[in-house]
Amino acid sequence: MQTTREEPAQAGGVAKNQPAPGRPMRPSPWHIRRLGAVGRGAERFFEHAGGMANLVWRSLVYLFTGRIPMREIAGQIYWMGIGSIPIVLVTGTLAGIVTSQQGGYQFTGSVPLYILGSVVTSSIILELGPVLTAVVLIGRVGARITAELGTMKVSEQIDALHSLGRDPVRTLVAPRILAGIIAVPVLVAIADAVGLFAGMFAAQLTAGLGYRSFLYGAGLFWHNWDLFYSLSKALVFGLVIPLVASHMGLATRGGAEGVGRYTTSAVVTMTLAVLFLDALFPPLLLN
Image 1: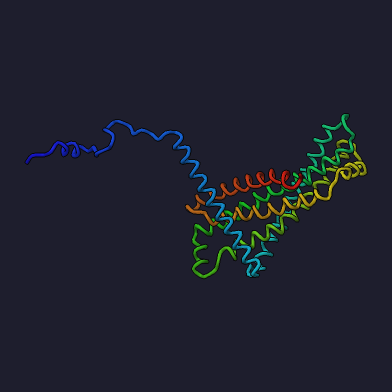
Image 2 (image 1 turned 135 degrees about the vertical axis):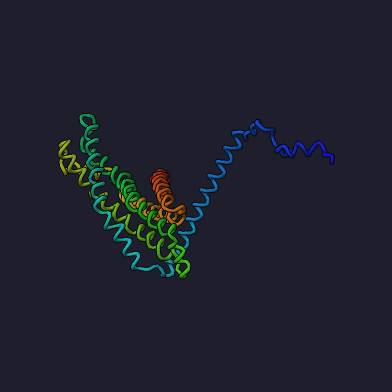
């Protein structure tokens, strides 16, 4: 039986339109690979943004219809707020002491010392109080929410809630978001007050600045808008931290390893979100 010329070539294992054995395939141009990476990153970003927007919308619907369990909200407020007071007190105290010490070192012999009161007040109220409080809450509150919901996700407890006709957003996500919006501004107000008193005390010990001089300098450039600015930051951070943590928790997959991976990603995302939003506040509210 005669064979055609193409049959031995195909029998040899080289498919048509394929490179010859031993010859590597030509890689894609670098700009194609970069565009592909950018496209995949943009797809993940909009996927996460859409998921979080959906959580906010559904939480608002449950809030205005009064279907969020008040017992869950009270429990989350207690855990986020009262449970976080010790770490917030420590953070505010250290922020006030460090700011006062560094300011006293810089101002000695160059400017009137009472200006230190204004510097400490502005630094604590406008920046350090809200941001440092948010950062410590990311580690204490955000990481726990992600790990908790992620464990429920990989152990199929979330699917069990769906099978029972219960919406996880109503019972798990909405109470945490509402509790964050309520608790974080209160914690930031505590951190601001403690930071100011700690800074005033440190200024007297390290720079010899009396209480009256400190308060005179603090009131010299004080604006009532500064307090609103600080609490506005706290309100936004109180929304973002539980929102991102809950979204990443519900998106967890991959077993125990996935819980650790998504928790780490959530902490990084929350930190970057807080810093990015903090950078947006001055041009939006201080100008």
